[in-house]
Length: 428
Ligand code: S3P
Image 1 (tube, helix red, strand yellow):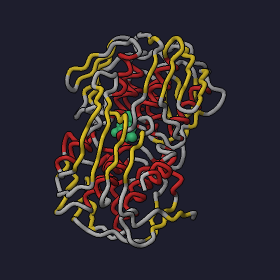
Image 2 (cartoon, helix red, strand yellow):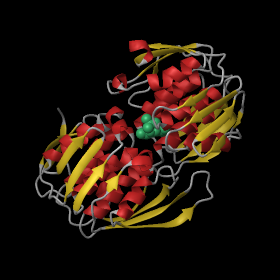
Image 3 (spheres, rainbow, N blue to C red):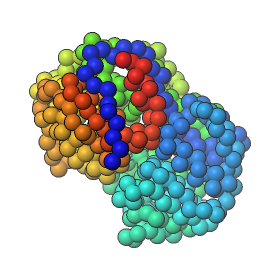
Image 4 (cartoon, rainbow, N blue to C red):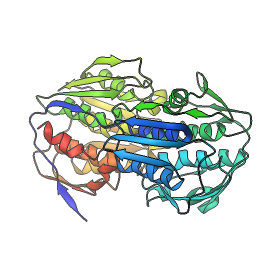
């Protein structure tokens, strides 16, 4: 197994970073640009492997997409202009690509097949295939449509009213994308508020969506108009540097143009409640996706409890919040986070096992974890297990260790943050 030596024993981090584009919004910008009529320009697109998988799927569906660095030009085809793909659609490691594509393809009368990597092959798809089948799509896959490969023949959908059994923006978005192509109205009721990038994108592209607290309604038969999309920086990527700045001694880091959509800012609330010296400036609340700059300084932290409705607002940040908690005085309890078990890895197990290897006092529970701080972190060999966020969390943990730390499977980081190591180096 290939391993790399991580930077360790760091006594100061300082500087300013512009965080790469938001992954969730980048995926959706390609999808909506493709489904709109006319030419859409996307700036600050995240050129990570996951979003490149979305581009490759749409090219196979007949959409012309030109990419130059972080700018995309998409020649949209409209909902009715996609063509039957001659090849299998490969989503790589991307859960957002496969689940949202299932929603889009459910409205298309042609045949298509989706596959992904070995992590995708284990992730549950019935959460989307069950509601999509009830709208009228023919979908099949291993274990009755639960796992890839999955094939779809869609068309002639009928709107549904659906109460989501899990708080998932991917499931909500898949049903919305199918609902936009269905006859009648589709109503979705969420158990807790999840990221609302799809709803914002529908409006940005000239469509209509009604949001009443946890109930979202769309009418079928809508058409989108091309527009320009500026993708804000990804708060889920910024999170690694927020935590690094808070736990490495003598540090001050500013992160520019970070997306501050309230459905994503749970990590800011948690860090502030733990005592972090975190400030927000240059806010642009008027943008279709709000953004601003974040500054973090070395902080004296205390433990906290993270549970309930805040969980979907920080679900992807829990690995790095667990690391943060190892450097806080007292106990941190993370509850109601069973969804971690079905992410790129089982993130309860991977976070607990890998942080333990570096000396953390952390235990797994059935729906989260308990972390006892503050503990010094030490050296060892750890693995990302092919999970980008686990890899970056461990690279931040290594900064504190006075002994060498080796990371196996570090290449997974390019799924969401190809420039992560060069950004880290620029702060040292
Ligand atoms: C995402 C939704 C979340 C999140 C994932 C991206 C999205 O997944 O964990 O990284 O772009 O809609 P779930 O919908 O499974 O909670």
